[in-house]
Length: 134
Image (cartoon, rainbow, N blue to C red; front, side):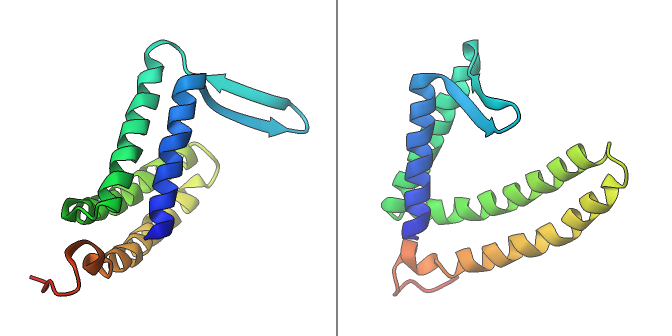
């Protein structure tokens, strides 16, 4: 749980830095050099939203709020669903892209179930060792 907490705190910090500097993303390539993309106009609201979301998630995890445990399942399942949708969205136009998208569709639920079972085992972190499962 400590690594998850550190990851969420670092994500909140990176989002705050992105908010202040206006840098959305950057990539470096030996062929094209360094490309920096900036937030434009109201797009900076996304950076505010990311900062608030990651900071709230880190705080809820740190304070061991039971609702954070419940929202963890939602995050796992939504992440898997978004991954499958993005696979179809980006792979469908490519030749034989449907093969990769179909593989993602088959295997993503198993990966989500693995992480959901791991998250289920973290219940005692939020509810204490003496709390009985219902």
